[in-house]
Length: 245
Image (cartoon, rainbow, N blue to C red):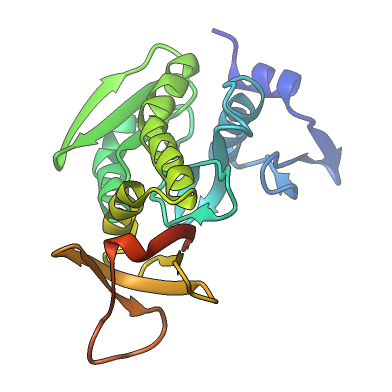
């Protein structure tokens, strides 16, 4: 196996200033020091793979570095500016120095996944890759043979959000069943703002706290407190406008 130093020397733009090695982070677009930072070398190598070799960036994934105290977070790429609800990270990646025992960090990663409601985590130290999958609050782990095994895991979880985008497009065209599904999923609380139009209404309505009962839709006006919820009949729905976080 080629050493990490050889790999990053071939793939990254590394340069010296004042006897110190630097490179520019491919995500943050800022100069970072590599000398004395073994984890940063592993992280930059992993980022290089995501951007240049995974086949997922930028059409399928968005990458965040050092976000929410996580080394790397991967999110589904926003493909419609009007459909931007809150999403948990598709994957959280924690990188460690080459000689680090990855099993010592299992509990840390499981805690990150639980707190962020993410389903896939990766521990990586250049020589080993361990994937953690969460289902029904239970974690399972397995070793991956190469970084090339990671993209299928990402696509597996991101396909569900693609289906929601299809429902969003249907609701924008007036499909009430799709609006019903999306409002129940993204509008149950005030985390997201769901904007829609009613037949005969002059202005769109921004709502939250949606509930459905007896052919009627009940909701709160976003940002306003009312003792009684607003409501409308199913047949008065015209179209969905946006769902945003």
